[in-house]
Length: 408
Image (cartoon, rainbow, N blue to C red; front, side, top):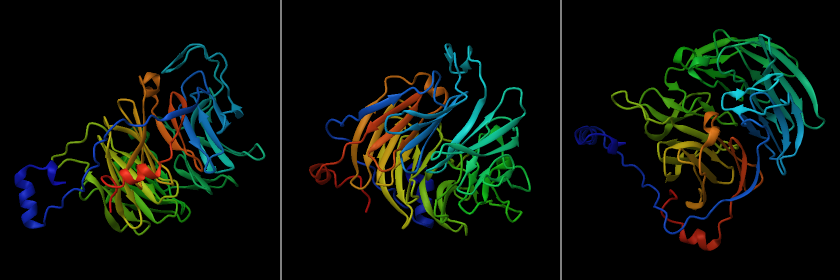
């Protein structure tokens, strides 16, 4: 926006097109910030938790270390399944465990639906990666797909029907494979392909954005868009996409699959003269796909998708590391100084804060925030797993905070 430009370019913009003003930022906090209560924690492994996902019903979660993976009950973190449990991890470092007789390297994990989850692994001295799909009720493995190894970060992308992996779409129920017309993954750029609800793959070979439709054997370049926060996000209803516009270098919302631009959702992310922000932008989508949040440096904005509307703008003590949005309107932000903050989007109030004393070794493997569905709990992956209970806002708090941060 204009406040980032020198006065002359901004004046010129006013004369030619009119200079839109930025919406007012959230008011500064007045008085003490409520403390978020820790209601649970678990290390799960003797090394750090590298992978973590919550089920869509909130009843279970899956987690993995570098060499082990497991399914757990969310209410008390009790293990329901453990695979490749690495015994003897007595000397753990951020680079691995020196005294571990490992059985497998864990590459990725996630959920397909509330009763179906997957993980990928490579056995020692094997050149292939295996994608295991398992059910929770009854616990069993229902399919195993073997794919060729690719270097770097091997990330799968799954929907309810297929898994996208290593240049092909795999029907995990039947094992049938649909190859793409060209390379899907570019591991050296650490990109994350998107498997859309309509079974297409959006990916970024050679730093371009390409849409593959393996079922119909087609390939299409999307020159107007690029990944944002590691990927382009498509909403669960397959109606909208969020990414980076190559036209004006802003976060952008499109209709999907028509790819018609709806509006913009941030300040300029890529400078006029080619300069980048010091910290990468962060993007989060609510599970129901009705709202999303973007964080750039110390600024976080929450948008409603339909109708497209800015609902909240807040600041964090330091640049944002990761974000999460709940379906019932809670925003969580964790920043690089270890501050965890939660806001109620509808009323624009700060629900609570927690300050971690140090980053520890968890900073080597990244952080992740997830709201537990059907509850008021927030999970943070930070070395181990820590669970916070989000206090409910009182009627008095709603009245006192009804102005200042909510956008009309």
